[in-house]
Length: 293
Length: 293
Image 1 (tube, rainbow over the protein chains, first blue to last red):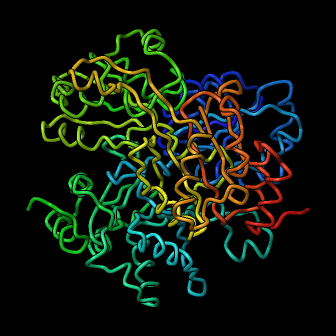
Image 2 (cartoon, rainbow over the protein chains, first blue to last red; image 1 turned 180 degrees about the horizontal axis):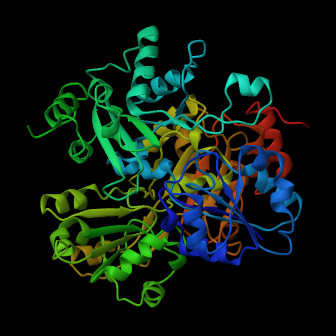
Image 3 (cartoon, chains in turn orange, brown; image 1 turned 180 degrees about the vertical axis):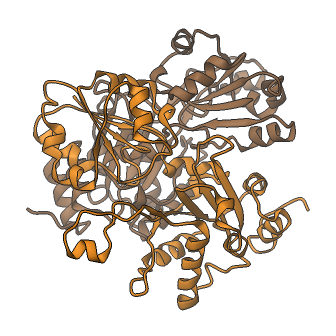
C-alpha cells in the first residue's frame, strides 16, 4: 500500500491516529519538504514515530516517483505531507502513477490552511477562489492575483491569499556555476504582502484594496497554541504599519474580507483587531454590516 | 480549558494525536450531533476514548452553552465536532461565550469536507463559494443556490454543494401536538440533488447546469477506505441515471466542475467516471480542455 498522509498544520501531534498507525506500518517513509513547512524539525517527527524519514524535495516527488513507489505493491510505503494531501498542492500525479503501477493507494486527510483559515471567524462558505502571492522582484511583479481578488470582491466573497516561501533557492552565481549551494529560506511577511497588494492597487485602481477601507486578517501558525498561533485583523493600513513580529512566525496567510459579512464574524475577528474601534467602524460604515453600536 | 476538537471525516481513528490527548484530559466531553454525521456510533467513540460522551444537539450547543462551558475555567471540557470546528458550521458563538467567561479556548483542527473535497482531483484553488442544497418540498423550493453556482460558473470556478440532511425532525402532527417523537434521519442522495438542480435550471435556463454538457462529481464518505469512500464522476445526465447505491452511503456531496480545468484534473477524475469516454469527450469538446486524444 502507498499511503499519502496529511500531517496537519503544527507539529508531530497533529497527525491523526489513523495516520500514525499507517506510519508505524511503513517500511519506508518520505517527508515532502517543499509545499509547506511544519513548525518542527524532521528529527522531532522521527523521534515521535521512532522511524527515520527520507526527505523528498520537489524534484524528487516529481521526477523520482517510481523510486518513492518502489516495492509499495508488497510492503507499505508512506509519503508525509504538511497539511492535507489535496491541499494547496494536489498529489494527483504520484497517485495516478501508483495506480498505473497497480499499487493500492490510501489518502489520509488532515487539516490544511484551506479549511483551518476558518479560525479567523469568517464563514468558509463565503470564500471565493484562493490566491497565491509571490515575492516581487525589481523586474518581475506578477499581478494576476489582483484579478482574482477582484472577482471575489465583486461577489462580496472573502479571499485567502497564500504567501510565498522560498526554500532551496540558489543565487544567480551558484545557479550559473551549477553549485548546489542554497540560500537561507525566505518567508513573505504580512506587511510585505500588504505592500505588494497596494503596489498593484495603485497601478490598477479598481479600489478593491484601499488602505483605510479594506479589512483584512493575517494568520500564522494556525492551530498552534497561544504562543504560536497569531491572528491579527484590521484595515490594510493597520496591518501595513505593524512591526513584523506582531504577526508571529511564518508561515503566514492573509485574508481579504469580502462584503458578505455577518455581525458575528465581525465580533469574532474583533478580538484579534489592531484597533477594535476602527475595525467595527469600517465594518459598519464601509461594509454595511449591521452592528449594535 | 475548553477544547473544541475536530474529529475528521470517518471514524474514531481520524482524531489527531493532539485531539486524543485533549479528550483524555477532559472531565466532561460533549459530542455535537447535528452539523454532520460520523460513520460510526457514539458507542465506538466511547470505547476508543474509554470515556462517556454527552450528546449535544443543535438546541443544546446554541442555547445551553453555559452548561457546556460549566467549570471549564478549572478543569478541561471538550466539545467534539465532526470534521473541523470551523468547517461548514463555525463555532464562533460558543467560543465568544467562553472568552466572555474568561475561559481559555483551544481549537484542534482536522480535515473537513471543505478541504477533503480535493480527493476528487480538482484543485482546491479553483473552487468558488460553497453552496448548500436543501430538500425541496411541494411548496418550498429555495433556489438561491442557483445564483451562487452561476456566479462561480461565470468565473469558471468549481462549486462544492453540501447536500441536506434531516435529523431529529418531527412530522407535522407530532410538531403540532408538541410530542418529541422524531422521524428517521434522511440524507439527500446524488440523483435527488441532480434532479433538484435540473428542476431549477429548467425554470432559470441560464444553461449552467445542462444534463449532457455539465460535468459533476459525487462524493461520499471521503477519507474512508475502499469499501466506504465513493467518488463518481460524469455529466449530470450520467449521475442522474445511476442507481443510488453506486454513490455509497451518506453523507454525500456534489461538485459542479467549472471551466478552469487542467488536463491532469480530467485524468484524475476519469478513474471515477461512469463513462470514461464521455467524461473525456465533454471535458475536451465542451470545457475546451487540452487532452492528448
